[in-house]
Image (cartoon, rainbow, N blue to C red; front, side):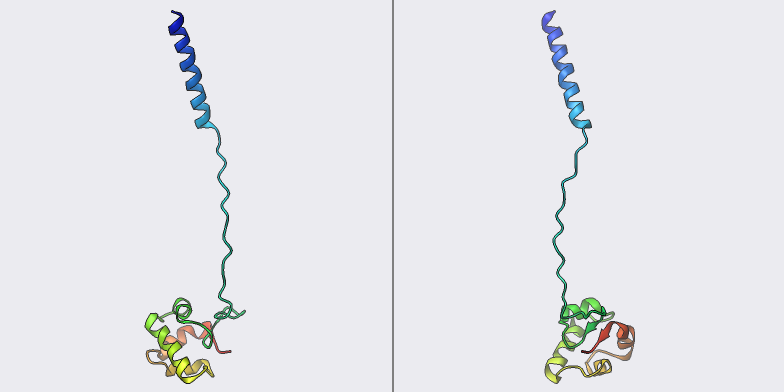
Length: 111
């Protein structure tokens, strides 16, 4: 009789301990946010992409209708012909038409 009472008490103690552990609030671990790196050379303070300093991935990411091939064509044109003198000179790049230029005119600048 003593043994069964003892086992009952031990069981009750263990059960209440496990319920207490499950019900206890757990604080969420603090997540350290890594600092974001900004590409200062490609984007000016105005938030526009500079055609004379942006690399192909930046052009592809920031401009509508410009994929990898067109972005590389823009960079290749700049490397072979020198810096862009105006935004309208972008029309000289193979694959860039008036529609793409008009869609992106407010996103690009020439410095």
